[in-house]
Length: 172
Image (cartoon, rainbow, N blue to C red):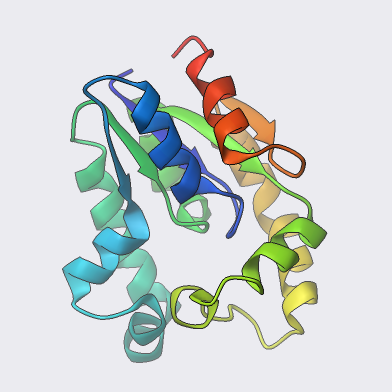
């Protein structure tokens, strides 16, 4: 494989681990798909959701993900919902060594609400209480993450450095 894609729900460590992993792989770059989406649109993810709805955001996410997968030796921190669309799941599986960063709802909730950028980078996806939303989204998406992943790692008790070390040791 010429790329590594990190998938998983919000706040599972995809961006932080991508940076750590790139520092271990000589000649590899890393990219945050959400940042690329914001740059492409010229607005924040929250603004994209507000202006174009989730469907408009998902269209842009699919386009940007496909473009990122064309780059050689790139570690891609994908958006948490990239697996919603079957064509994204299939493209990821064909084009990258896919690592699912898993975390419990409790861990995700704690990480999200200790991050000051959550409001602008992680818009609410439902009208539910934030914790209930996390549980519902994990129940909906976990099978898609599992279908897409080459390997998975539980991030609840590991540091980003430990996760990057673990991925580095995998046969990608």
